[in-house]
Image 1 (cartoon, helix red, strand yellow):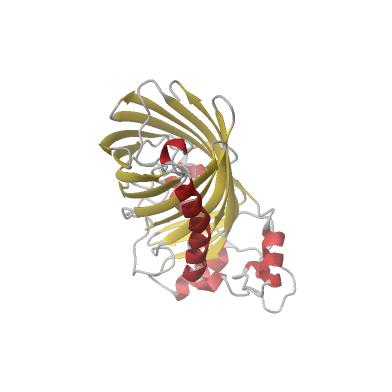
Image 2 (image 1 turned 90 degrees about the horizontal axis):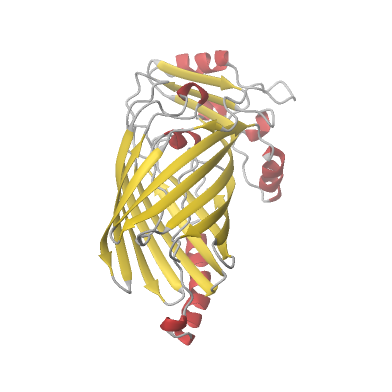
Length: 367
């Protein structure tokens, strides 16, 4: 898979470099919106603070960006006992039951078990405002939804056509939401959607410019998440998180190169009071190429550690990585639109299978 990713990057960079050399820098279109303002989409990670990517550039004083975005992702992951056939003698698909979780937990005392079979949607409103030449603020308001697996059949058919393993999907009923998690003395079992367009935890950000020149820019951000969502409906953690983020942008004519790294100090997860969440760390790299002023193409890779502790490489506590590929289209005036596919290329057992995002935004003030 790493070879595939390098091939994709190379394929994008060859025409980008060629066109960039043929075009004078002062004639290059303005690229000002940064990478996709997105976060890891694995269900449990959505409950804690994460920084929406913005790049190293800050908004000018009096300038605002308003972005409404929707991400929808299909997820089927679980501990090894839940990915095998729960009823080998039956030809019908099964549902996970609380008694199965108890039975498997009794066989593995001290081991954490999990199962996630759902399609989760995250709708969010992100508002950024330039305050001074070196400071901007941002506010994010999310809404979370959990639905059945409308795309389960299509994903299984795709896997079958390429002779890929379904990871246990074929044993369970389609188009259902089931979530199970055991952590020490705490446990969670959800059968059915816990939330539909439920307000989540509100996040507030402050970004400071620490480097700004024609070639590159660098910004430092502080973030604070407030427990405004309902933990019982998996719309928030019930705790307050804080974090720090460093983001950069390198400019070269029609191209932009992005990077970001962050650290989050997590609060409590009130639904699992005995659980002590780890502090996630993340890394993002991205590339944007604008063939003309009205559109640009973006490829973005983001990876992070999770709130779960354990040996490196174990299912829940290992790295979770997503690749986003899509475009941004600028309309005359203030409007812009975005769309991207989100893919788990590395087959990790603590991430989504596939997702899609769309967004519509406004640029107000100076632009």
